Image (cartoon, rainbow, N blue to C red; front, side, top):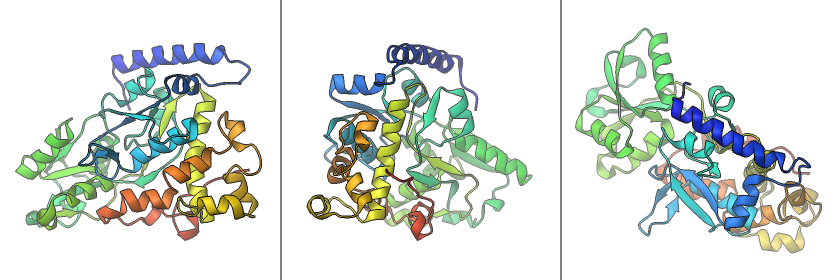
Amino acid sequence: MMIGKTAAAAALVGLALLAGGTAARADGSGSPTLDAVRARGQLVCGVSGDVAGFSLPDSKGVMQGIDADGCRAIAAAVLGDANKVKFTPVTTQNRFTALQSGEIDVLLAETTWTLGREAGLGIEFTGVNFYDGTGFLVKKAAGVNSAKQLDGATICVQPGTSTELAIADYFRAQKMKFTPIEIQDLQQIRAAFLSGRCDVYSTDSSALAAFRSTQGDKATDLVLLPELISKEPLGPSVRKGDDKWFDIVRWTGFAMLTAEEEGVDSKNIDQLVTSATNPDVRRLLGLDGDLGKQLGIDNKFAYNVIKQVGNSEEVWNRDIAPMSVPRGINQLWTKGGLMYAPPMR
């Protein structure tokens, strides 16, 4: 993926600043990002802020979704309070610059983990919170039931996304042609599709399903085609060079998966604190060992995350399940999915 001169310059500035902070802590005792978060008493988390199921304010203005809850989990792990989060909306075009420059501490905005992004932008992904794929949404009236019938179609797509490349690769492989209609604003791109300005709306399949679910009685007029034409592992990303912060964000996610594996949730966690005998559960909850201390945070970090935000299943049921999106490959590995946490010991 190519980036513009502005983004590249910001990346160099961000990396230079980060290198200075890391050098000041050559003994590995701290993290510049962790220090900054603690000093301000708040996590600044970059989210899209306009995608149902991932990050979207509810009727009371409270940010909801799997990405929003990921931000809360990090705040709970680091600050002991899931509410100490400032949600900063980012776009597909400025999200990496915001992370590179230090405007945000972590990026959680339906962002696909790719080699180009990790090798070329000075960022690294800490894991996957949602396995997705590029899909196509069409109107039922078009009579299309397969992506292979889209030769000559006009396709609405956001610029600066991995979706652009996935579409181009797919149509070239299928020896088909298409005309891209690039629109940055999410509401405008959806309006363009509904008004007929383009034949197809393409983005991550989960986002298409979420959009369709908001259409009420007209949802049945829209058809999500069966093909997924790309691998889109979505997850948090942080700036390179701050290994301790990377570890914290990574293992916060793994703690939520481990909790689901071990049957620990926000409702039974306090009971388990007094009764757990399983060594893995006791380490997870900070009753034995120093897992949190090794990360530079409280040994009860996972307890705070699970108690205040929930395990990965609770987050899914709260944020994604209401959109009638099957969990599928986002199930735990023990249930045929791809979600797998390394041992917490």
